[in-house]
Image (tube, one colour):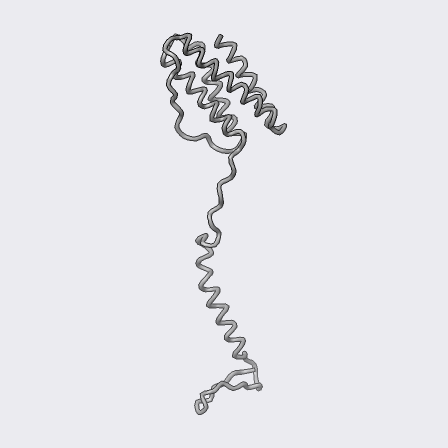
Length: 172
């Protein structure tokens, strides 16, 4: 159907004599083009996507933070008493490695910056007593995390628990 508009009447009339489009089809096509033309540029700029919420925290993130904090505590004790460096540096390095490995396992990078706790106690015995208490809490936390973890995480957490138990012995 072809639409014609005679000049004399000013009205659209249908002409069934040849190929063409109806007025309704033309209006529908125009509306679709207008709607598509208006929304197409907006879809490319994520206006309709919204922000994705951050993933929930992994249950091992507190254990990684604790490992970083333990490493920092040992390094602070070394700074307070350099004579403890041979004894405490391997422990501090182990804690740092544990934190890195936990972050690798959970697939998230370690936070930037490092905690800087002040050494506890003023003398060597006070420093070591504070480290033993922190290691004891850390060992319990690692053992609990190991018991609650799925199998693919239990091996790493068991190793961390065992390492923290040996750290306690080294601090006696």
